[in-house]
Length: 128
Image (cartoon, rainbow, N blue to C red; front, side, top):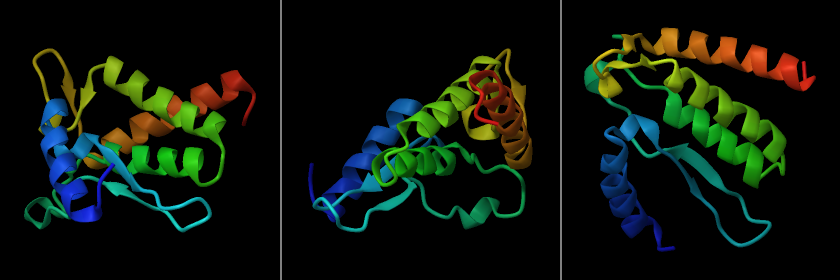
């Protein structure tokens, strides 16, 4: 869509549509056959390092994008994306996306919830 500098600006602006930088994956895709870079839109957030407050979803969804676009494994990307949606539908939230009626969890807690959802999904799909 645009070069890296303006892509960074656009992605930061778009992140506000989700309510948190911790929700958006991103990909820098070049010409076919070139190396791609997958990363969350957000930065490193050193102010919350080690506190269990970081939202891991953008990193996990960036990996799903990698599976889809670099490894042509859309089937596995779908499983990850569905697990993320399931956890969010269950109301599990890190502090940055906490809402009334939801259950707040830590970075590790979100990871554990996703692993549980992935395990259930993979068993149902016969992947595991």
